[in-house]
Length: 313
Image 1 (cartoon, rainbow, N blue to C red):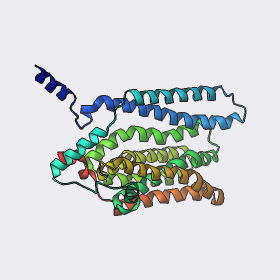
Image 2: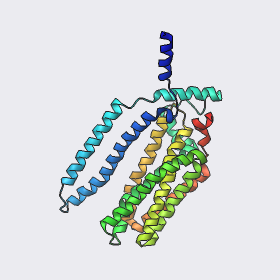
Image 3: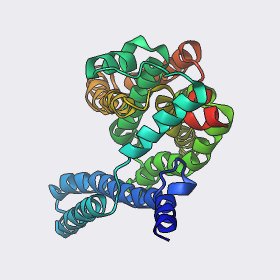
Image 4: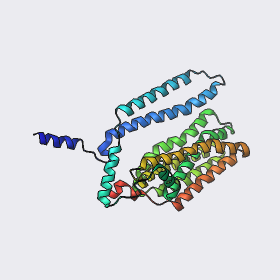
């Protein structure tokens, strides 16, 4: 009887790979990420409010927003500490299953931080392609936060219209990535990444040369579509290539380059706009987007079949 009970307990506690098998933990992580998204949304709302407060707007909204921000932070921290389980055991299982399926250890399993940094940033042409695309993608996003607001304002567009136009980009991207992430599992990563970067460049040019509201709507919508094609797919490509032992480190390096795009977009392109004007600065961003897509098309290798689930199938 004891033996039977032990077998049942072992079966209940068996570690399995896959989203369906770990749906509870996945939903908890979705909730935590929702708190992160709420914080980012508050940041983008509160900072402009603080600026406008200098022009006489009451500060009650700012206080409430900061209170909400603190609440989201505390809730996210408590849930992460109390409910979210460590995933290291899944990494160990993946390595064991990978060895059992292929009979060999794949893709440089033992790398230190310096080696992973170089591998992700330069030495592996696929990871290099992904990292530069992530940087340019966030550079574009940084430019849409700042320069596009000034660009629209130069046409005497109202605040509500500017808010609508700017919301199109993350709104369309946020919804469509539910589709594009799944699509990349079927058709591949590269085939979505390089068109996504080129589409963003086209969207920027449409915004720049339209000079009327409908054209701006089309341009911002294309920016959202292009971002949706690349955003989840870039992360998937990193996971495909990086060995489980250093996957998190590689993702950290990728995020370093990706988020550096915000800095280059806000400061670098902003500085160029001061020197040469908004039109030239925005034009440069469009060329960077298209150039990034061409680089991916030429240099990147398809990674989908390298992923664990595809090797297992």
